[in-house]
Length: 232
Image (cartoon, rainbow, N blue to C red; front, top):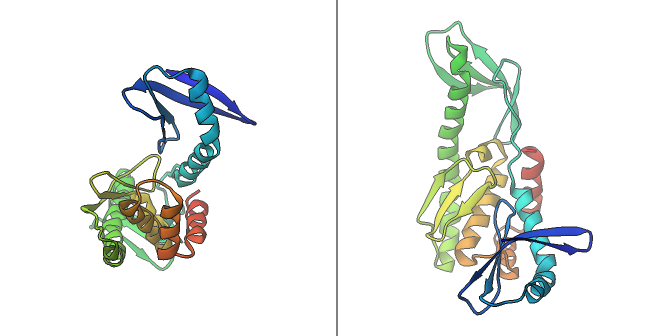
């Protein structure tokens, strides 16, 4: 059941369901939808009073997920187009006078060698995925070792293209990283990995979570902002 509540100048829309539980539960999802689970028989007035009390936290969570949302511009995959790799800009150069099919970066260019221009997009995306596997695992290994002092370790580190997140940590301990991160500086990638590792210790974005993140990466806000500005 969809509900709407005014909080100052903000309108808070949420999906309300009644379940067998003793307390009100509020969840802000990565796509910024708000789910509210209320005990059976709760009145709308009491529910909204509790939501109003939690409104600053709800809006903060929505802003947090918005800042994580990848904003990936459309690409045409033609010569001269600018592409990012590990935070640096490269021009795409398509080489058709060739008998081989490969992608490499050299100087200020990402070169795609192929006789078929229709293959360029897939070749570039596949190249990014290969590089993402190499770099994400390389950067994650040392960070995972650091977090062993908290008696946690991810079940796996995997790559998955996600619409709303740079990374995520499942309840089973799988860390997923968006392959688009390979376009950002290495410190930005480390920030996302550390953020997800912190979720192995603290599931929610509590003060304890952010205290841990700051302890493990004191300048995380710098790299969070860099990530947002680089891939905007």
